[in-house]
Structures are given as structure tokens and as C-alpha cells.
Length: 104
Image (tube, rainbow, N blue to C red; front, side, top):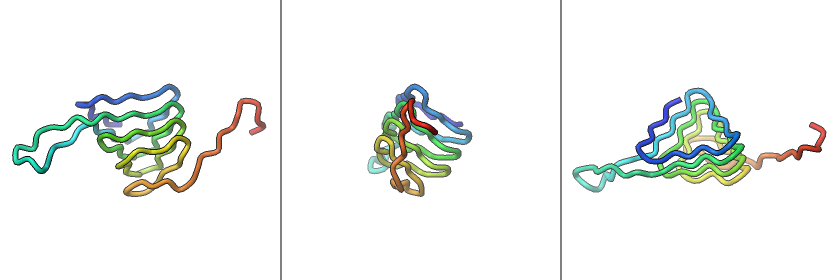
């Protein structure tokens, strides 16, 4: 896992960050010839799962319970309980939520 946290990165309770994940919370202003640093926080919600080798781009937020699939590149926010895949990552389905009293 690589956490490049020049900007703030918040990780919620029970979130899973798998092997090889890269989170980068800053970028540069490519319109300025001096390329100044821009801090862009990342938020990973409670019960979210960032799968192996995924890349979380600066300024992205992963909603509660969302899944970012293996090798996905998240360039925008991921909605709560959505499952995202691809480059750039897009929602491919909604995650089922089981209650404590369900028979799994």
C-alpha cells in the first residue's frame, strides 16, 4: 500500500484497504508554469473496501460501504454501497447490504 498524504486522507471504521492500493492526496496545477502543489483530500467511508492495486485519485471520496475493484482508478466520488471497476472507475452495480439478523 502506498499512501501519499501531503493532503489529508481519512479512513472510516471497518474500511478495508487491500495490498498494493495507492492513494494520492495531492496534485499540481498544470496550467501554472511553476506547477504549484494542490492538496486534495481523500475520504474512505466506513465499511468501504478498496481492492488490490486500486488507485484513488486526489480529491476523491469513497462512500460508506462502497467497493473499488481491483486495479480500478477512481477519479471521482464513489457513491455509498456502489461497486466500481475500470479505468476510469464507473459504478457497475449496487452492493447488497445484509443485516445482522439475515441468514447469510
